[in-house]
Length: 98
Image (tube, rainbow, N blue to C red; front, side, top):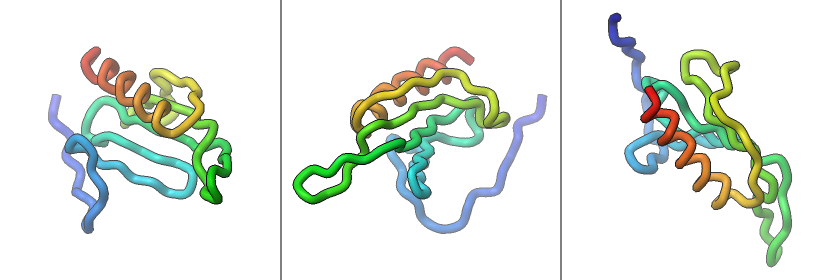
């Protein structure tokens, strides 16, 4: 089985724990596309706190990086911090299950 190689996207982007973290609109993607799966967070609603708009309901998915229609695990949390925290755990477990 040959290793798949993909060209890197030119430019700078945010990384967290040595993996890309990209946001477009209400969707946040975290993970390396060359690995088995990635984490996708979809901000479903917002709340206003002290005049600032903060994510309220966040849909969490760990998906197959080769087939985005294949969902490995999904759920919902309130708040971006909790959603990202549980999503990191799910992603780590899914990657170790390879």
